[in-house]
Structure formats: C-alpha cells, structure tokens
Amino acid sequence: MRTAIVPAQVTTVEDSIAGNLSLSQLLLLTSPVFGSSALFVLLPPFFNYAVYKVVLIAGLAFLCGLLAIRIKERILLMWLITLLRYNLRPRYYVFDKRSPHLRQARSVSNSKNVIEEAKPKKLTRPELPPLSAAELVRVEDIISDPNANFRLEVNKKGELSVRFTEV
Image (cartoon, rainbow, N blue to C red; front, top):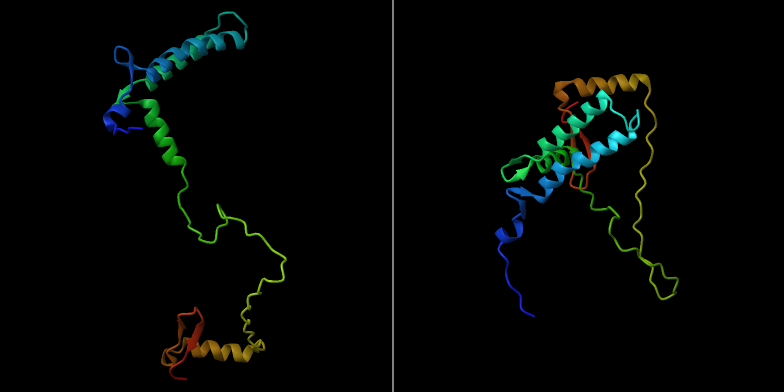
C-alpha cells in the first residue's frame, strides 16, 4: 500500500457551500427557523400570536446570526467554545506518581514458591513525658534568648533536629 503526505493546508480548509458560507455558518443561520417554530408551538397561547414569542424569536435569530460571524477565519461560536473550555479547565494540576489510574492490577498468587519480601523494621521512639508548666516556661525562655542561637534543621532523610549553640 502506498502512503502519501498530505499538506496541512488541504486538511484544514472548510468547504464553502453557498458563496463564502461554510456548513457551520449555514446551520447557525437556519437553526432559528426550526427553533422559532418550536417556540411558536410549545409556548402558550399554543399556535397563536403573542408579543413575547416574537421577542424570543427575534433574540434567537439575532444570537445565531451573531455567532455565525467570521473573525480570523473562525466563527464566533468556535471562539466562544475555546474561551469556555479555557475558563472551565482546572486551575492547578497536581501530579501524583502514586495514583492508581491506568495501572495494571497485580494478581495475588497463593503458591508456596513465592518468597516473601523482608519488611523493614519500624523504628519506635520512646514517648517523652509531658513537661510541667515551669519546664515549658524555661524552654520558651531558651528559645526566645538570642544568645542560645536556636535553630531547626532537617537532614536528607527528612528528620527534624533541634540545635542550641549556647545555653
């Protein structure tokens, strides 16, 4: 089978149906005819003349005519859709590499040949006793003292260390 490269200009040209009107413009200009007939039939007084029906039909025709106008080779409806998509998009994208989306589910096998992985031991730290009110006041005095040079440091593993240079 032979393949050929098609230029982008050929694939993006819209077909003109009547003069300079494209299919989307023609559909926009004819849709008020069908929409106004539906409004005339469905709104009360049914199948009769009313002033509010004429106003609605004229507004629909004006809106569809306005959306069919071309600006920079695109109709206003397409510009409106582009702006609407842009404004309705999420503001922030948060990447989470642990997301289960589009991942294959692992099958669990009950065979005895499977070697269990060694689980790392969790380091348990002893719980510190609560401080009394006098001890809390003393610690706050040390922290606020500029001579103590109090600072908090985080190492590469993310552990928090408290440093005092002078007490």
